Length: 446
Ligand code: PLP
Image (cartoon, rainbow, N blue to C red; front, side, top):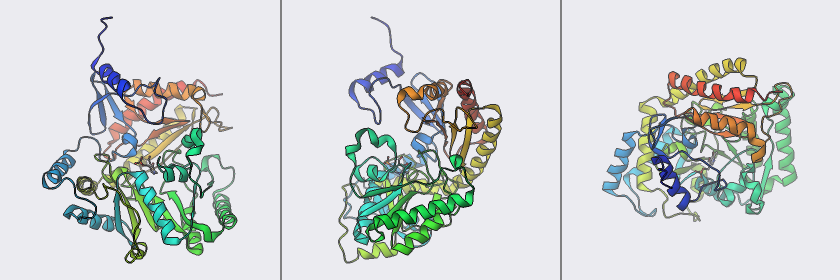
């Protein structure tokens, strides 16, 4: 057969022949073969352009192809590309200082990691060693990473097909889902707070090291907390000596219109886990920020953890430059403003599409929730849908891709989380694509 493959198809073939894909069956998937990326756009080997409406995995906050990062990384590599975490570098100290500056309260000490999961693992270990307690509380419908501790603490059904992969001593709670809650806002708060205190008493407050929550919910569907919830959680944690760990891996670094998602809720956590936006995805890197008080415990006690690549100098350089770009280019302000614009436009889309049950966003961390029926709120695909139950949503996803967009379509959610550099025109372009694709789902509304 002499049929020639396009350049994209050739690249795909090599990848399929010799590499493994995450979180999926290896057959029947059709990834985009990305040749280059610039700003909010990806380009494949055949010249097709895709608007990136999920900022990669909600990490490429400053947009693609920013040469300031390339230059900072090259400069650092020319000076020193690696030293062990037992040595120090100028860039590590500078980044630590900068992190303490952008974090509120006494969150002044940085432990630099490799990614989100390694930040979470460090937080879990430190919370247990600091408190001498073993249980960790967290939320169903949350995601914190794929390593043992991070997967176990998460409440995402991705782990269920292989339930043996979970470690013990993780306790999950349920937080009301505003769109699906039939009572008023005040009762949503009182019920969820009362439930939390009940669970703490069932589990034994003296056994619980920490409560881990996302600053703003991400991949589980941008499920917003009841108003006042995190403040109440802060008080309850203080009452029982439980540490409050906030996961800002996805909601951090301007994504929600503030440096950190928890700043939308008027609290200061005891520990904050970070990754993704800290280097905007240019290099794998992460950070666990802890308070002075927690850090001081390890002045005379061994901190029993560490990795070859902690505080990697090149990662530190990428992070430091990324943080400067957020400030120099006013990206966090832009995320807040563009988030308001997206919300206005999404409201207009509801009048056109009967399949849109809800749209929620905090800054540029948002999603549409697609339903079969606005009155019953029956989702277009059930929570943790099997592939065959995704038929309609898969068609929507395929149309989105065909029309030149990269974003996440998961269960009944279509995510809207473009890079923070996005303009109104680009939002219009992206929402028009989603709108056209949603006409497919409208036809299935009952
Ligand atoms: N925490 C949250 C809130 C996340 O969204 C993610 C990844 O999506 C992680 C942790 C895990 O990060 P990583 O994939 O870098 O390990």
